[in-house]
Length: 284
Image (cartoon, rainbow, N blue to C red; front, side, top):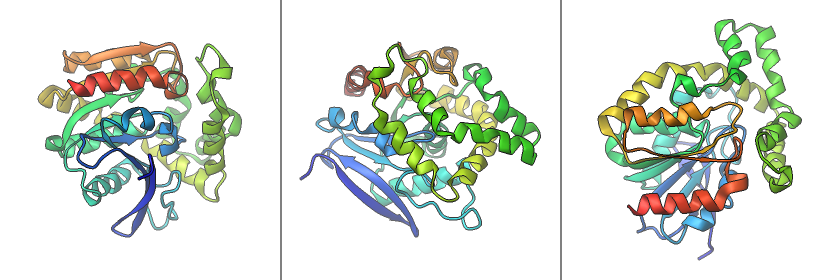
């Protein structure tokens, strides 16, 4: 069988594209990507994990190769994204699994964990925030849109969809820009130019406030269930600050927190170190 298989699942009529590697009987690991990426962001991590785990990396609804229905036919909210991914795990037979969450993948994965704590064997958070102190001032323009969802404030967020902003997200806080492959941000920018993709992403910017509102519920889940937890954090992330990673220990004293000298997309520069940290963590 090929090392990585590229497949689609029919989730109640919704096409979810996903990458799959490893043997079906191995411990299960679900990888959830963030904005503005897709499962492609795990292209270098999956080969490091496939010998030990059954790895699945879906493209979230509206991202990558998964369906991006019109906004009239699909409500682009994080609750709805979590609904689709929850059903996706059931369709592919992921009954109990560890979950790796990053950026948008975090509020998606944390929703899954709250809804079905019995299904979650462990959580790895790579710059996947759940605490107010983890939010930087970089969120201020989006917060302004939450407070006043005017067309002017919505239009002001289009700068986050510009090609140079995508590249900046990949390279900010990285000691050496030459260590970052252009493959990731170039593909992200391609997906962002699809007709209608801009409005989808602006809808999700607006709905991100629901994730902040759920922080107390996420934290209650952490305190109540105390899942084995590993935070692997790019310490120079311009959006999700190190205090957000440290805060996990407040609710889960046994949480492991590791920082890396890189930015938001930590896998672009530290995939070997993060892959080894995951293997050691999950083998426990």
